[in-house]
Length: 341
Image (cartoon, rainbow, N blue to C red):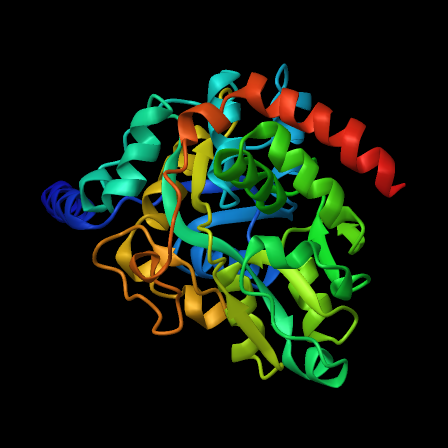
């Protein structure tokens, strides 16, 4: 009997050695992507792991603010997705943990650079360029030509036809703010935004909300990441996507493990899983058309290619710095936000 028990124990141990590691317990996840993608990630991860996910969806700026508020007693384990600048700011504030995933060498150079710039406290999970989407039916009905350049958006003919998010809550809008500063110079960029403000009907909380409003016919133009406009077209709405003629910025959507995470091992399991080509290839199932960071992932045919877009040399290190962010947002509040209220 003892011999049988010994053999069984040895066989079980050998099987366990070749099976993939599975952690048990819970994972507290903040997701800053579109809710449909967040729900897909939660569902897929729980289906393949013995880990229950407590997921909260919020914009990038809100996620950053949450990590700051929780700094002394973190309740979040992983912050997945959302624009890279707030992730870099969280790294700069020492709110996130250094972690070098074994998946790192499978990633695109821009995703690896994001990790290097942050001291390996964040990593790139996808990328996409900034632009806008417009409702073709609304512009045609009103006899308005489609805007092709940033300068076009300040034309008085678009008064009441533009939405963009608030950069305090939205990583998309902060990317737009930082893009304009790099494209024009700070003073010129704020002068531009004052002119643009005359045409803006709403500064939304979420970065993708403006083009969703355009898709529903509530506004003509939504300034967003181009892949969010593509998603509306894919869903059957009369939305066309524009890459600004002067050039534009882009995001490196990122992922970070929170310093002091209560479920650290589970956070690392999710982190590595989220960087795999199989998982990243599923994004299109949630109408998300960003460029995946894993070189082996399937790129959706609808995804706007960075090589086809005139991009600025976006300075992620500078505009991912907490002090730079604070200064730009304070000026935006004084000169743009106050005028909008």
